[in-house]
Amino acid sequence: MTLFVDNDALDGIASDLAGVGSRIDSVAASVPVTVEAGDATPAVLGILARLTENAAELVEALMAASAAVAQANASYREQDVASADATISTWAE
Image (cartoon, rainbow, N blue to C red):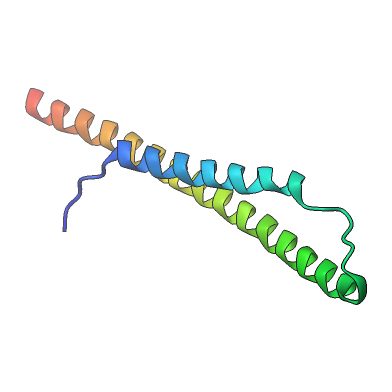
């Protein structure tokens, strides 16, 4: 087991998660408001509603995951600074 945390990699992961969430969210503007599918219109609208709802939940999950990774990375960085300070203090004695 290692105690090394690659902060740049975690920054990249948080950024990627947020970016994907934003791209999925931007697709919402292209969802048709009405559909002309004859007898299948109610079914198609139901499918679109389900897809839209699930996409919104996915966006929320991606944004939450991005925030969690960013927060964890910030905590790792704070602990690294505190550990470095403690080590330097010990060596100075």
